[in-house]
Amino acid sequence: MGLSQTLLFYVLLCVHLGVSQHYLRLRPSPSDHLPVPDLKEDPDPEYDPREQDLAERTLRKKLGSLFDPNFMSISSPMLVNLSASDNQVKLQGPMPNEIKKLDLTETPYGKRVKVGKKARRKFLQWLWTYTHCPVVYTWKDLGVRFWPRYIKEGNCFSERSCSFPEGMSCKPVKSINKIFLRWYCQGFLRQKYCTWIQVQYPIISECKCSC
Image (cartoon, rainbow, N blue to C red):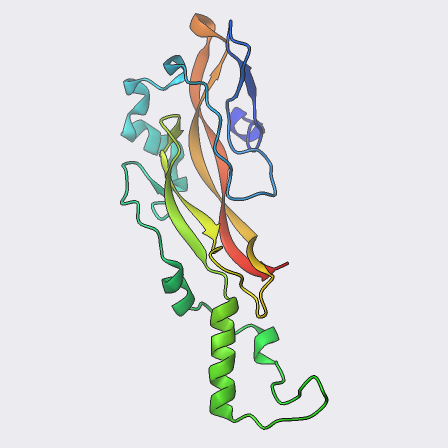
């Protein structure tokens, strides 16, 4: 098993010589909490890749077909978020069965009311839109120790409750993994050895209204 495989999803602790504070050297760690929290980096520029280590042609070859321009960027992209309103209007896929099968004719008191097809269709569409949980994407700068350094990270819409009546919220239920290169150093000061290794980065891909 290669170095890149054995180090995936593990966080290594590196102690800087002469400094008592510890720094996390890799990212991300296994976690149920997404999006991935920010990494606490050693501020010492000695642990940064040099200019010759950032040759785009070499790094592209190292990453190969794993480079996904839809979720990663080499240069700073336009930091524009996909608005939640756009996500809610463009509902993806068929209407969920739990909404489609709602019986609108029966009241809590046992009485039945008559609901026209047009009114039913409009109400179910409104309910679907209201309870829909879009993934809102934001471009994030991971820093010079990742390549590509920019990632399109997903977050669940959280500006309001997604249930009617209120009380529930949008939470992540699925994620996808993207492979990035991470500048990894072993050892200390002049004795250290640094190289690029592959790490997996989980990105929220689906959110759902839940308690």
